[in-house]
Image: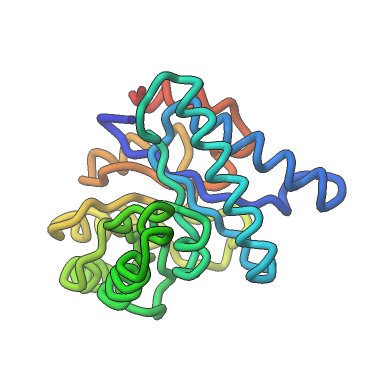
Length: 230
């Protein structure tokens, strides 16, 4: 695990070239690479997929992470897989938890649904961990405080910097990130984060950084080394 900087890889298989099958295989390879390097969290964020397709991909991702865990000699996965928005898919696939977009259901509702499913029978309890990890997307210090009050595991604060693919988006900036980090839960910085500016996020109080392209377009072992993980 990255002790000094939590690392959160957000997937986007459509950024890979070629057809759907090739993109899916490339994404699973990237997930395996991330798990082998000890990335803390992976968010499966493939919102265009049907529930059935997403569950199938999530099951494969869970298997890949467990395979990398076994190959590394660990008893339990170092990398936690979170499913964007879909608590049902997270439960069915054996993922570690969910990532909740802004204005989604509350973390408390997720915990209630999770406890109900895990308590419904032995099979559900064996597949899913008893206590889910719940990340919440936040865009202001007030939203981070609210996520903490609703028992989120951590907050993902965005956008800290201007993003290349969304130049019209107003970045929150480091001062707002610093204010958000006064909450009682860890805060991970997202939005235009690079190797060059990641340190400024940590100095502002962030527990770590989240990104899509930073992980998908680079050697993840190098990213972990540069950010003091491992």
